[in-house]
Image 1 (tube, rainbow, N blue to C red):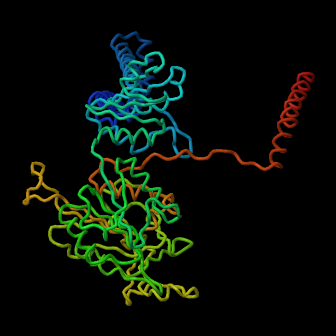
Image 2: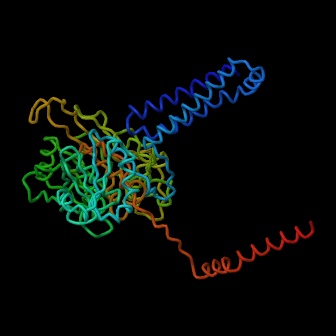
Image 3: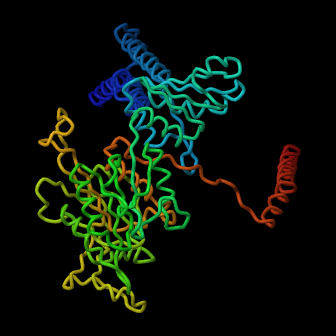
Length: 523
């Protein structure tokens, strides 16, 4: 037992030293764990003298100085650890518990990831009237506590208008971000807006997404349930602007296109339009291709688009994925863990696909291309190839591998990329072409306004775009909107509450008083 306690004591001391070193030299992302480590070390060290209390008490009775030194050493170790705890606490390692439904008082994974990647000081200056500062201190403290690179200053624009004009502030409140030689202003105190401003001031370069139109695709500016208005607006938070693109009116994809999105076309692209996409990809372009199942009386097979995907090592199935784990078999639920890929790395939220077809990596992969699935169904799902049976409401489809049905798990999203050029490659070097990235998914409705709010759909769409645009540092879970926490009660329930408060509580207090009085009287 003595040997075990000695080992525990040394482990506790090592944990305390490690926690101090983590705060002093460790990565910002891991420093929030230091306080837990130091408290664990303190408990382990305390176990040593507690386990020796009999021996220490006996030796004190004998007044032997060498054992008194043992007690003194233990006291000094505990004091040292307490000093270390105080030091770590003063290093802004604050621990709070956020009990709100959407964790609105805790920075999101994306915000913490962006702040953890800062390699220079980021100064935040809130310009407002002095009596309005307290409204924003808690929110800004979240950012300063998340990274030692972040500092927050408060400027009273009324008392110091000259300095406020130096920031070109047009109104109150305004949050001014300064990073290296760049400045960004934001007029909102919401986390999504602040983090978006941090992304802009850090990255500097703005990217552009083009949504192809003219073939029945989802409209990024529409107001219908199937529009992409929601996700298109959220792209701005990742420093990506968007425009629509009519390929039939262009000779080539615009040069400023960072990524081209073809979301759910109901008709095939023309041959000339396909050639434009091919030329764009040959120059290192980035393409997101979302192809829904095609069945029904007037369905078109999208032959050219499927052939384009095939050229890049992606097989698009002529089928519909059936998932019996849901109440509606046509809705596919993809559960974590996802196949290993940067898009879904640490992605721990399920995603829902209302109507999907299989999309899988061709074997063998084309030379010079890396092809990998990153979303798939559960084992209970399968890809149904008998499209006619799906239109028969009385039929109960069952998987039949002999007819070509793919049994689960079924891949429904594939990413393709060419090798990245060397770091020392010069732009335009034919021996080191820019990297091309392509994503093909078997459903487009998952990102529509009617469905995008389900599970992790929004984050999956935005993470895919960030991978395509080579912004892997933004792949994460984004800030959530505050939930509605209002208590809804009926008039009858309100009456019960009022009677309980008006009569019930006083009656209980009165009964307790009578009971106490009667006991004292009998005593």
